[in-house]
Amino acid sequence: MPPLSRLYIRAAFVNLLAGFTIGALLLAHKGVFIHPALWGWLPAHIELLLIGWIVQFIMGTAFWIAPRFWKAPRRGNETSAQAALLLINAGVWLVVLWSLFGGRIWMLASGRLLEVGAAIAFSLHLWQRVVPRNYQPPSA
Ligand code: HEM
Image (cartoon, rainbow, N blue to C red; front, side, top):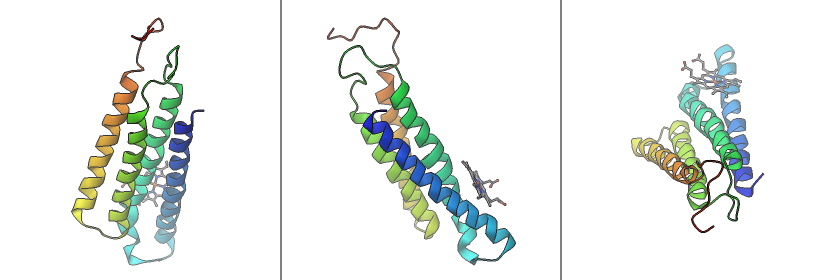
């Protein structure tokens, strides 16, 4: 597994742990009162698990398994995939902080914009690798 995929997947597991912890607190709160602010954490639970875990795990796996070129660099230009890793995590955690601490609306909006940026950057990376089996890179 390439180093960048390992970073994606490890970051996804951090989000899984955080998301499950909040989910467990929410579930427990249904039976035993914990804190009145806890239901405000539901968006953080959803964000961590849907985007931070599921989407990020898929991105890390896609970077690993999408077609590689015959010659180095086997995965083409990785810069936009590296940028996407930073963008998705910055976006998820901005939305999580907004949810946990009742932040300003700009935090939510900026987090979402960073996530859109991650989607665009990652698509730009994968686009170059969507090629037929007999594809010859221009330099070959
Ligand atoms: C990948 C795993 C998970 C995903 C994608 C996920 C996603 C979601 C989503 C989208 C909601 C909002 C549902 C709605 O408003 O109708 C939700 C609510 C909730 N989740 Fe999760 N969840 C996951 C795992 C868990 C786990 C492991 C727990 C508990 C240990 C948990 C506990 C809860 C609770 C208590 C609610 C609130 C339910 C309610 O509105 O009464 N979730 N989750």
